[in-house]
Image 1 (tube, rainbow, N blue to C red):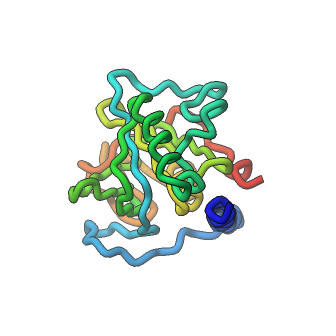
Image 2 (cartoon, rainbow, N blue to C red):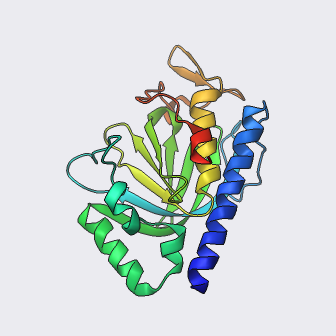
Length: 219
């Protein structure tokens, strides 16, 4: 019970952090700059540096997302990777990993994650991966029940799930950067609200979903 109580308290605090950021942005605020321990490109700034659990879809067919039967939604909620389950006994974690494995998701464990004005960056097995915002097609959060968010990219880049206490803040940031910030495309060269981003890092936004209801995540 102590594990569950602590997990519930941690999840509540994480959701409160996300809700606070959402309120501030809705009131016209801006994302605050954050210190970053890695070297960024010229003109690139960091908004978040954290650690998350990283999962990637490794199946031969794309994960099937829809509003009624999302992966890990509905009847599979109890088996999803959540902050609460992460804090429970090893036996529960092994069962959860078996479910994820059966559904063609691979765990890379806790990884450093950086969110900038141009991209998400994650360090997987000592190698920094870069996910430009221009390659993102869907942002699928599992808030507030689960501290997880899936990001679906262009073909060729596996769908990626981020799990952890910082996910509510991460999800709010992603929606804000993808849907609310001013991104202008001039002759194929992307411009952000800060400075011109390297053309090799981004492409035209190709979001397939309307703006997620951030307020609905936090009640």
